[in-house]
Length: 79
Image 1 (cartoon, rainbow, N blue to C red):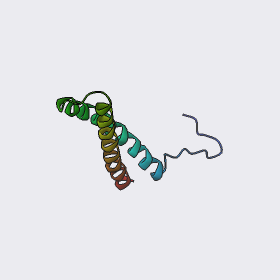
Image 2 (image 1 turned 90 degrees about the vertical axis):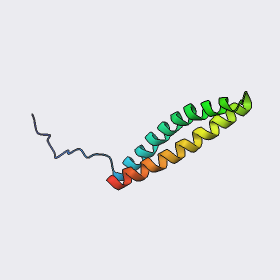
Image 3 (image 1 turned 30 degrees about the vertical axis):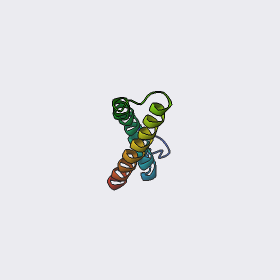
């Protein structure tokens, strides 16, 4: 394997980049789980139309923010 000329060593992402990526991944997972669980519970309560969309959207944002925050904290601890 040839050695790169000029000392062009590659470095990994910084700790801040890892924390941002952890939050983004956690937010996506939280949004997906919020859509599933929030959708089922809203349908069980008999919500339809605009009430259904508002309720599921609220649960998705809350779940995404919560899970994203915990993933960011966990990623920061690992840095």
